[in-house]
Amino acid sequence: MTDPHSDAPTNAEPATETTTITATELATHLVCPRRYEFRFERPLSAREGSHDRVRARRRELLRRPIIAGLRADGDAAADRVDAALERFDRHWHSSRESYLADEQEQYDEEAVAAAIEAYFSNGGHDHAERLVDADTTLGYERDGIRYEAAVDAVVERDQGYLAIRYVPDLTGILHVSWSDSHVRDFLDGRKYYPRQIGSFVRAGVAIRGLKAEFGIDLPCDFAYVAPLAESRPAYEFASESGSESASEPGVHVDIAHRHFEDAYEEERLDLVELIGDRAAAIRAGETDPRERRFDEITATACEYCAYRDACPDHLAAEVSFGDRPRSRSQSRVSGDDDTTEHGRKQDTADAPTGDD
Image (cartoon, rainbow, N blue to C red):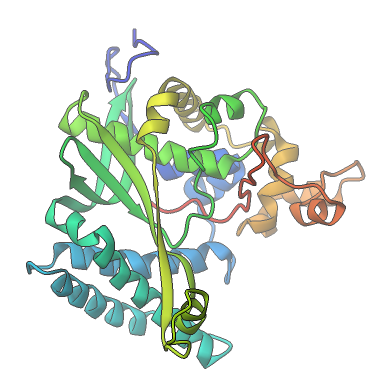
């Protein structure tokens, strides 16, 4: 039988058929099993204007040009920036959204372009120089299941490999410096932040996929890179930094990185347990959210769910005569919040889990 404490991908008990489960499927099921059903088993069209689609578009506006820059020929960072911005310009004009004001459209265009340029000037060119693959899928097999995670880049390091996923910002990404027991706290019911745990699951699947491909003993890491972590008009930044160019045009952006190698090593066994549990639930067709901390799901996930208008569980909870859990907005009004025992506030906004 498979050793539950082993990190090595294995099929010690040969299965007649291998099931593929993606990190996005696992992450979606963690947020809400019914959402998983509507997204993957009985696909429904998401509500127009949902936060999911807005965020997904912004990610593509960053991801596609950055990948074009990573793959570009040329020895200078400027060559890669030019290739990336050329791709961005084409993609922007072919997928323009309607804005309420021209100024907002101009700001968003300048912000994304500035983020792309800043990325290649701050580590992105080095990533391109050591690029192994881009826009690829990492995976491994265990107990008749192939787990897969889509990544935007795989980069060779001095020792080992790094997988990267580009995101607009770090909203919903686990703060891995909090403690050493994120997954165990979630499994045991002490904490509830499924979207953040889903970001850890994606990192874990990618890291194990790297080890499966390049060597189980090699140091491997996964990072969410947010080229547009923060943005502000350039003149505001100039004023804050004391520069004389207070009227400087354009947009200033800050880049953020969040790495998971150390957290993965600390919580590997609990992560294996969590992934195995949700994979078993997916294979068994378990999509009833009432069996998975339903009160917490309705209190956090429903508010931002693109499928809630078609969800019988949400509708039943809305018309229930029993006490219903307060929404996050109600909690804020009453003075409650999501502050952890360490005094930091974990973002529980249940926006999209990302696409594989």
